[in-house]
Length: 357
Image (tube, rainbow, N blue to C red; front, side, top):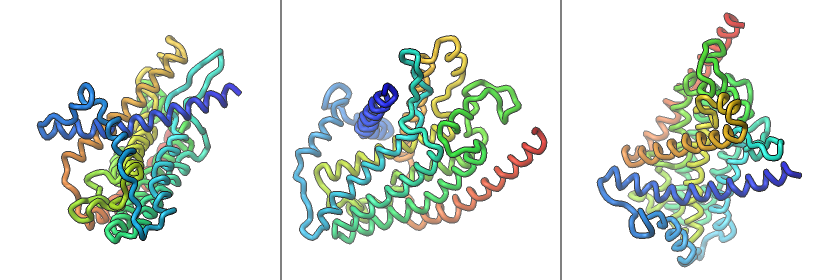
């Protein structure tokens, strides 16, 4: 019963965390842009503009909720709801920290530890396409439909490269369980034989090519600049959510930011050691399980927020791709490179097992 209660509290905390990060990512986005463009950014609502996300949320709620006369009303509502729902439930299988101990019992900081966590995440990401496609089609607007088709084509294309980069990690760890993948990055030996700092045996050292492919594919999956071809205002007015207003539009926008948060959390889990940090085993032995658990949560969030900052940095640095360049990069560059990387990974693993085991 205690475990169930802890899981419910954890679900509630993750829900609040995801929404808070999504809200304040809008503030951080504008602050990063203002720094790079030598201007001030949000500074009126509260100190340093910190109340701006609350003001924006209130504005969304009080705006007129307009639905086009010829829209498919049920699907028109389902579209943004599906995007937000899928974005939130993907965090259920991510291990957010090591563990915490209460009353002599350890509690895992993972809502659902399933054996096929990677497949679950890929499946949820694939379903997320439907939210965008349904919203664009249900609007009964040709520009919205074009934006939805662009978005779905883009996301499906980059899902292939993302999946191939994940296969290399699965081959190395020998598991689809995200907890196992995280734990394998907390050992103190590089390649299992070279003495190394405990908690710093990250997969990015073994798979830099897969890391780059996954990082760029994650930006494309989130429709982030320079891959925001689904929303480019100069061509499509505002893309697949042109006809949306009030909180329906807010759900699409917050869904994108939650998706960015979860994508970076997954990136950290797979390539950057997850909740592991240098010296985590020493902290666990000398300072106790709770100290290691709290520091592991902070380490995980620090890595994730750094990834979000890089996403924003890229947005305000690089120009937008043309659509043909976008598809060319996905199909003719990333997929072949990911396949070659997969073959080389298999060859190295077989050679390593032959010579060292």
